[in-house]
Structure formats: structure tokens, C-alpha cells
Image (cartoon, rainbow, N blue to C red; front, side):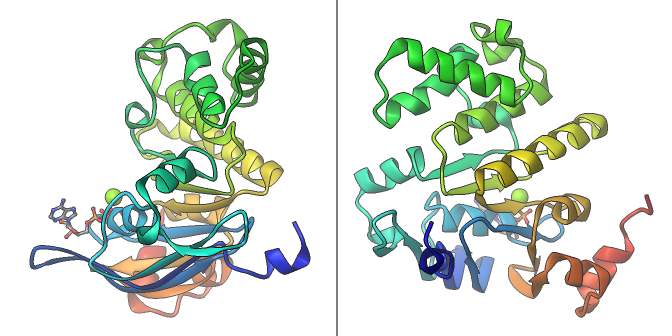
Length: 262
Ligand SMILES: Nc1ncnc2c1ncn2[C@@H]1O[C@H](COP(=O)(O)OP(=O)(O)O)[C@@H](O)[C@H]1O
Ligand SMILES: [Mg+2]
């Protein structure tokens, strides 16, 4: 990556709004994501986090604003101006999306190896031996024993399924990964392990990530920058350490004060 490319945002969100009929999902949201940067979107349930994530990842049509992505060739395109084929290609190659519920991001009835291999085939890999080798390597990276490669995720625990979903997303070396509460459905002990693993992979691969979480400890551990939402609007944003150690907005102060001491 050249110095010039690092200086340029990968994703620019301008005045984004989404209405569900008369109800506001989110409104007036502006932020940017730079290469290799982890941005956390936090806020209580119903504050608009999932709406925002789905709009910026092209999964949900917005009602207002712009979402501009810098493509690999350097062209800046609003994601709603892409053709359906271009959008699908982006979603399979340049982007990842990690769902809270792994069943939404996996094919539960095909093997773990095929779940990972499928993404490789989508970027043009055709050699069966190499696909299986790479899938096996990735299972190792997410701490799934190689002997489980032919098992279906149906037979996996929640934590294993989530790790498999992460491998499936990262195997193509995406530039930008969206995550919606990736540790939300897991036991606390399993969460901690998964967070460690995620942090390592994100750093090793230099991924840009937009992660939605209601858990400020997750934001603290993974993100450099943070956006705090309330009632669909951004009430505060800044460097994660600054926001958590010196929250300016009363709502952020309340959120921070409600974290149990650890
Ligand atoms: N499909 C939908 N139809 C109508 N209202 C919705 C829909 N999805 C979300 N909302 C509303 O939009 C607001 C933001 O919801 P959401 O984005 O799911 O918040 P969060 O992810 O922070 O819990 C809430 O008031 C919610 O009730
Ligand atoms: Mg949500």
C-alpha cells in the first residue's frame, strides 16, 4: 500500500439516513474508515447500529445521504451506483460481513472446508488441492482442528461456528470487514478467546473493520476509533481511548459509567 493510499479513506459515509416508514433508523450519520483502521459503532439496543451497518454495506437501501467506497483500482463509487454484479463481486472479494448469528453467514449443511473453500472459488481459485490446503490452513488459524474439515457447522459449538464464519470471511483477504456483534451470542469465556483471536487476525492482515457492538469492552479491545449512537444519531465520536477515558457527551458518560469494573 502506498503512503498516498493510506491517506485516503476506504469508505466515506455522508449524512446517511434510513427511515422505516415514519420511524427513524438512523439520521445524519457522517464518518470515514481508513485502510487498516478498526471503527466501533456503539450504543444501546435500538440506537440504529445495525441499520447503519446494513446501509453502509449495501445490504439495506438508505433513505438519504451517500456511501462512497474506494475500489481497488482507486475509483470512488457510491455503493448504490454499482451494478448488482459489481456489488456481489465486492461482497465476495473486497468485503466481509460477520453476522452475530453464524448461521446467517455460513452454509450449515456443507462441510467446514467447503464453507471456506467456496469463498476462494468465488475469487477464481479452481485447484482442488490448493483450495483444501488453504481451507485447512484457515481452520488452523481460527483454532478449529484440521480433522473437523469435513464436518458440517451443524455439528459445531457456537464458538466454533463463529470462528468458521470468520475464516470464511477472511480467506480472500478482504480490505474491509463489517461485523455485527460478532461475540454477542457467545458465553463470556468463549467471547474472550474469540476477541483475542479477532484482534490478532485483524492486526496480522491489516484489515479495516467496522464493528457494531453494545459492549464497550469489545470496542476498547478492538477499535482505534469509536462512534457513539443514540436514537439513530451520532452523539459522540473520536479515538476509542479518548471517548472511553474522557467521554464528553452525557449519554456516553452514562454508558461508560455502567460498565462493570473489571
Ligand atoms: N425492519 C424494521 N422495520 C421497522 N423498524 C425497524 C426495522 N429495523 C429496525 N427498526 C427500528 O430502527 C431503530 C434502530 O434499530 P436497529 O438498527 O436495529 O438498532 P440496534 O442495532 O442499535 O439495536 C429502532 O427504533 C428499530 O425499532
Ligand atoms: Mg443491532
